[in-house]
Length: 109
Image (cartoon, rainbow, N blue to C red; front, side, top):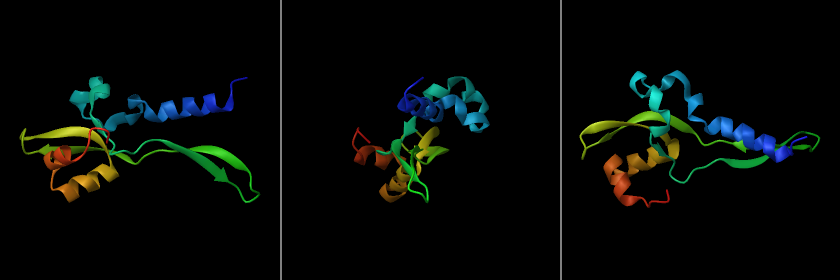
């Protein structure tokens, strides 16, 4: 019998798989799903517990809120199709644009 955490890892891998993004991807990028840039701004999958009324704990996964969107780059003068966390989109708004966000943030984020 597999270990409980190995089942959880398989479930997480299903959430991270770019093939699960479905028909939202534009037609010309469907064959290249792995090459769509992803901007998470430090967000990642975290783990925790669901606690029932009886106090039973079951493991669960907290997935980051990721959306597919176009971001406009003034330097390149084109729209960039990407996956972005909502935190990243808020930071882009506060920085004043996508190019400014890339200049201000560190490489780790």
